[in-house]
Amino acid sequence: MNAIRPVRTPADLVEAGLVAPEDRARIEAVAERYAIAISPAMAALIDLNDPNDPIARQFVPDPAELTVTAEERADPIGDLAHSPVEGIVHRYPDRVLLKAVHVCPVYCRFCFRREMVGPQGLGTLSPEAMGRAFAYIADHPEIWEVILTGGDPLMLSPRRLAEIMERLSAIDHVKVVRFHTRVPVVEPERIDEALIAALKASGKTAYVALHANHPRELTPEARAACARLVDAGVVMISQSVLLKGINDDPDTLAALMRAFVETRVKPYYLHHPDLAPGTSHFRLSIEEGRALVASLRGRISGLCQPTYILDIPGGHGKAVIGPDAIRGSDGCFTVADFRGGEHAYPPSE
Image (cartoon, rainbow, N blue to C red; front, side):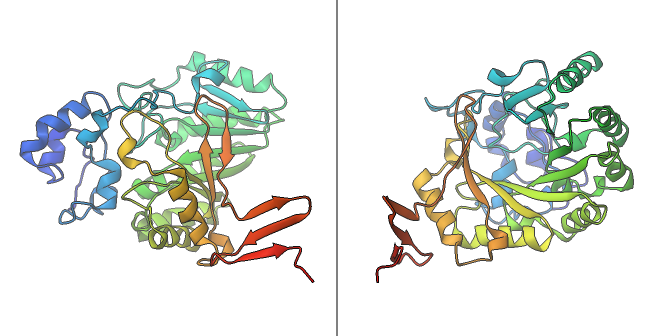
């Protein structure tokens, strides 16, 4: 499929062949609650002959999204509980989220902020709210890093991004600015000289955390966009979500992490899916996730190993879901290797 414009409505989905005409009414019910957007780059990757296509599964609405389970919640990681002023989330001592915008170039069907983003979401921060957010950052000298998220901050124009970065440049205790984005993958053409210059306008160290979940997303165009960023001195790290039917097998996960490293993007976080409303069909158990991540050890280079994490519901922060590789106490341990073999540590004489 070669879409020349974004897919944004149930009618667009039917026209593009992504939804059968007889299913349109059910998809319209989903669209009434959650935003839809599929960029031309992602639409072009979808295999219309594969009913389980992993790209389509990420972006094409599913009636299963209307099934909300008891444990799911509108704010699954507790952003609102840690928001001292509009647009700021201050969950950890040395860093804050700055949510300047709440729109995205694509809307993931598993998004943990799906109740906040989109045309019906929280919108873009007003100049007054932005001023209060910068004042909060300036008044808290413990803040070392500002993470622009939302929404996707690279949806802002280079002019708007440069204005934000110039405001941050005046706050001496902020040393690092990080951008959480899907843009280099889903709209790689946006990564041009003007945008890159805006990212670096503060003079601070700039990081871009790239969200991708399947190796097919790292197209030649996406890799070229990442190369433009890295060659300009922007450090890139990855974020992925472990998703049933998309990347929940060792080969796909290994291929994704290798694709990141080949693109000069350091694997960083692999998120256990959050308890967002209508996303139970994407979730696997922690035991299954732990086994998948353990299977990467020894299979692929240490450069390719992500950290598997859970955002504790209610706003309590992230916890590492490590493989249960070491057991024991009092100086005597049993250590499991990547093949499942067990060894005493320290070794017996």
